[in-house]
Image (cartoon, helix red, strand yellow):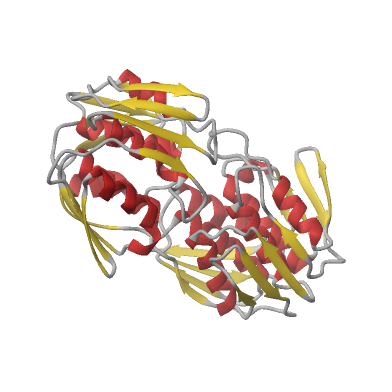
Length: 420
């Protein structure tokens, strides 16, 4: 098992290219199960989660080739309907094979998912949505067992306790594209990654409108064809590098980014005093004055993303004043708080929110990553901390950031990998 060693205190400068979106590519890979024709996906990030999804597709009978960011997927004679526990349990997003299996094969047996330990994330909205389309679903021995022989269009409401669900919207949308009749999904997730999946399905011949809004309408078709698609840039990776520029008082240009996907974060950072310049698919982030503390609440898109909560907390740790961060999506997503405090941060948790008192500097320390975005927050803290920071369990980081060490080194960071 590897760990990251960071010698902090370097102002990051230079350019970095943002990879394809992890949260977009995984459901799009699953959507290739809806067709027997070849599909080609470009700008596919080389991530642990991506490789897991490719293994799942192979286990279900697909012929998959990955070469320098391009994935080619072909059907084989055998197409299975069982997604095994050993693969699905390692990554929550793999549960989104359920919808396309039901749409194409009208049956599925999919293990209940795993992934990051960031609090309870039930699959009840997935099951509720698919049942609304006529699927007969039961949970047996840790598997969701479903029969969709009577699948048809219908009305689906996907509002949950903490808002709409991205993966549930993906699953229902993929099942509905081959269901006879009209499907209306209300309280659908509006995230860019959901819209990207819809655009891929449309290229395959699906009839979808309203994607990117809370109401999606789908007219079922008999079959889908193969398609070629380029994955959108990863807005969470882009946001992480923007915060890296600010926390080190550096100056970074990001290429291959869609600024319109980062509106809520830009609003907060500009309010805090950051300098952000946007030009088409480029963003330049720098700091010309001290930042001000912030009051942040995570919300479904287009609100402030929960996947940026841990990273901006690291920035607020070294921002003078008192900041308050409220987590409305996953109230238990604060595993990074104790590790940041080990580095000299002053953070106090009170239920679903934390109070951050900015300090003049952080100190390097041995810390342990608990989940994907917590890993990123510890890297950011390590970049600005005095001395050496050692981050264990970096396999979490490898799930969502392509070549992050090399990208940071190219910006001047003193970061290296070492065997535990």
